[in-house]
Image (cartoon, rainbow, N blue to C red):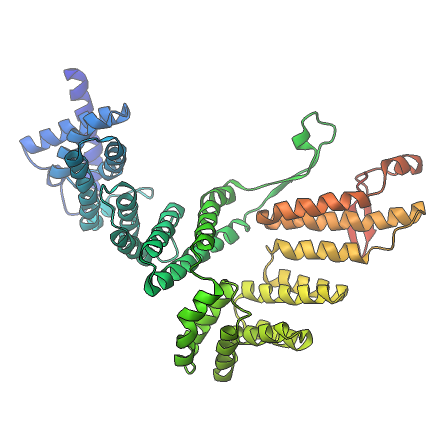
Length: 488
């Protein structure tokens, strides 16, 4: 045992010395102490690491605490390991005093890391380099999940401090627990301020998640062809496979977005009646304040309150001050409610012209496409779907609407086999559009597969194809495009 300990100490000393060479302006002894202190630190470091590797966190804790207390600049690892050790001990500890002591040590550890962050980052690797915001978020998470006597208000302040420091680069797990904390705070207090805070927090989390999920769509995807000859039924349908980077984003941020939406729906915080109470007087007070009006319009749009009198009033005030995209959308919404679709589309087009954000341009163009589809203007609908895709190439729902336009453009059903064959081309092309929708936007896969399933009845039957020597997979042309013939 003694020999193994001495060997481990030698290895740790070598590792720490190498780290010290990257720590400008100080020496190895400066970082771990001098004389007996340095031997004690090295010894306890080795002992806690041995216990840590065996997941014996109870034994590791006391050794680790000596290293943390005496040499907070020894290695970045002591902060990473310390978090794991404390998180495992706190839930299992039955002694309230000991539980409180471990938790306080955990909080102190985060504070110490922040206080020494510049020094620690001076010898950090790319993987261990961190920011104050990240540590504040980690501290908020640890407080929220492990505090023996948790205070939602305190947790909320801590989360806010970290998220504001990070801006848009917030980890999914932080957003997941932050929105839960904000919801619990609102549910407990039920006052106007906590309601408004929860609405704003929801919007923050929602925007971050949607932005990153949108980014996931930019990674290349792979379409795995169907294999009807396989005995495995899962291979009988074409499948879209995400790139590893995209899959990681989706796996992290989609559950967080789902959590945000679930809590929002359950909260009832932002039903239109509640929003009217919150923002009714603010609209009147801000009728000469374009920035505030636009923010209110954005909130009302996001929470399906864009058919309310408050929304129309805010839009009218904003439009009088300046022709902004949100104001034009508000004018359009008011006209749509009144059934004046032609005039509404003029304002929607104006919103596209005024907007600078490509994604928002695409969203508005798609709204026009939907209106045209409902009016039976199929060619106009396709035109605006393509406009939407020009601005927002990953808008899967635009491809799905194009697919429906193609089906509505197909010639009438006929018992004539040649006419049946020609008609089937439209269904094959519509299927292509659905597959394209899945490849650019995996979130619409369920809807796309549902449409494909409904289109299969329009494929040319195999029984007829056999006698005409027509084979599945051959290329055919329809509506100026090339598609792959599919049979049923």
